[in-house]
Image (cartoon, rainbow over all chains, first blue to last red; front, side, top):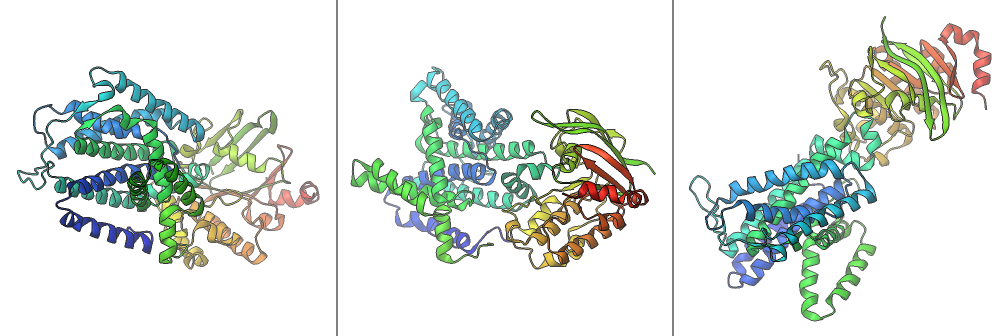
Length: 323
Length: 236
């Protein structure tokens, strides 16, 4: 069974990752652009996790950045300051701890829905933001620094050097690919079908014998731990974490990117993140009023594009409605 | 034969409106029972109260000798109860195939008497629509899918609310034939409908609800004896 929903998705993923694989070969001398694309990929992972929550599960949150920040903080707090640690082991730690935090947070926030859920997620993320901002132990607004990047050896074989920008780029690209495949497999699974049904008609899904709270909690934990993974990658790329990572603006911007890409399509998260970040980069080099033009363009795109950029691509490729 | 369902003195409210005034009846295992009544008399509310969708303020629902009154809806349904709601309740984002796969499960005894393939065989019309979404089906196809989706949960008790409402005569006939097959398979069934003739032929027991109260409860012989009264109660 194919993991792809339609032709446009298949084409986009093929071209995106094909180009993605060769880009560092052409930009070998231009570290800035490799870093820029790496950061866009990290944002795409974060937006993808939010898209699964909002677009597939129907859980609208304004606090998703809390997990993005938590992912970075968990690593900087638990990893020894001047020792090289293993990337994969700490990935497991970061995702497990953030999943546990998401389980507790989800247990609270999923008792609400709609506007109340938006408010409670916003309130919790702001609480978290101010906790870290006011904490002397965690560096306040300046945050914490990562002095030594982890090594990536598996059974003694070290194939990626995270101090090398191209290597880090490939790690991000691999992570994005894994996230995409993971979400697509999840969507095609029995669990994914129930999640889709819950979004469409929760009462009906309950009447089929499904406990909507349990299913939503699992979706929340999965999406939150992947957001934390994106935050962990961000921390490794820039070598620091600070509370601004978990501000509500980060959540809202990610929501705009998900909308721009086309809610619920998953690959639209990649489109949305790259379109937003690309526009941001271009406009800020053209005019000092870039935010104004950016806002206008986003409003125009959201109003004119049904199902965002993924919908536009779908129309261009000529996907059938059922696909 | 033991009772699969006992409903005792249900009182259900919508806000301050008292809808069900002490509804009581029981259904034996393997029995097919009709619930009749005009629109707004409390038929659907009775079903929703049994299922916990609209929990009653007082009264008890005993299913397979267990009091399930305080259980949430999803837990009741996991005890092998299936519900085909009025309006069908399609998921517009799922295809026909996904509807059936998503709902399929073995019953509590681990039996899967109704599988995906058997349901498709029962409704050959759905075979041509497997990749259509829930909202890309005709009313009749939606009803077939709603029944099929209920069957793949392998229920011991099937509850059908207005199974043939708004359907073309030919489709209705097809639906009634399927319900007959379900009855023959031994599944206890509650059918809410207004077609006395078919219900009389199909069901062993009949319940008439008027203004939230059971005003008639009897077998087909009793129904025939009181036909005038029942028809009068059903007429607008």
